[in-house]
Image (cartoon, rainbow, N blue to C red; front, top):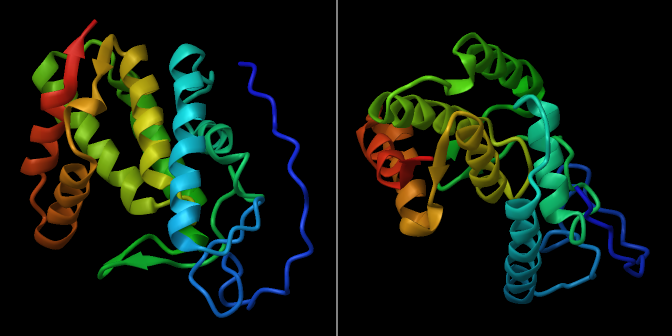
Length: 209
């Protein structure tokens, strides 16, 4: 894969709060290589740059073993132009709208467990469509709940699962479903233990190659 890093001017950032090392002091804005201090502007830049990097991944996916190192490589490819910590496991605990993600200290162990399950299951190869979509949904949620990175998890997860599906003989069309629907399905699984909506979402976008 040939994705070259952009030459970006480096800024001497103010020392971040040790408890909140990813954001500019006194703000919710993630420290970034563009030194953007507006949340709205940064979101637009992230969406544009990561989308372009994602298009490169569609043409030339990152090889790997579908383990944590592989997932980190995907995140690095998508966000290397924006965040200095692209591809690095988060160092702080995090939550979102009442959903507590896995503690940072447990990320490596839990992802290793997920990878071993995938490996034991032949990485979803040889499965019929319904079974494939159901099992993929379970792994999608498991990785979502780990939330490996401080930001950019959902986009990285979509690309990671697309590569996993391709290796198993399936194509995923995430454009056929709204991202909020996937997020809502994950929250349904977290708060109510109901995997049905997420499995339905993954079945809707899974197609044999």
